Length: 292
Image (cartoon, rainbow, N blue to C red):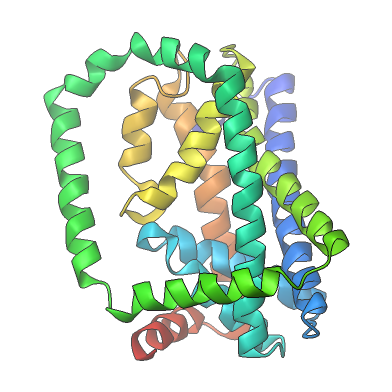
């Protein structure tokens, strides 16, 4: 398949490693939410921890700004007999620690490789003035404004309350517990960041590892800022403008990366939700968001 390039032995090894990183990411996040809920005295079974993680990934990937992920995970936690209050607080604590680790990793990558990456992008900025690029950016802005104005008014209020309660509860979590959560967050984030460098290597491209790692960090987390599901359009635009530092196979590399970070999570999450919660699980989540 074109997505996987020429399947030489070394390419197969790199793709196998990509799958390994996907599994490591899901395992780390599943254990993390199970651990946080346990510290909240509201434990859930291991299968439910994995189910809510996978379901949350699918819901996040299919909704603008990934806003469907948290309701899906809360639903999965309560399905595992965790209290709704504990579930919301646990996800908040988990998110705050994750964002702290994320910021540290991002700053470290930017300090180490930002100058080299910026220099590489400088030679590709001509693409940013292309009419097609301008049209795509304009459409993304229009879609973003439209989507934002269509959000229910309670969403911002709930997000503020969510973070406030999480910050309050975070002060009650012991240093040892925080360290465990931070380690699991690091494993998850590093696993996801490592996928793009492996995909690039599978296509026998050899840009600087630091540049590709920083690009991977930016592409993964930039999706949160874009109004389209999974950053569709914005990610592709960035990739084709030389964002990843590759010279050839850009489309195939992007497709393979999307397979690991977007398509597989959607398929796995919806399949898991169908068997664990029933085929109408996603509709239940959407209905609950509208009613809240």
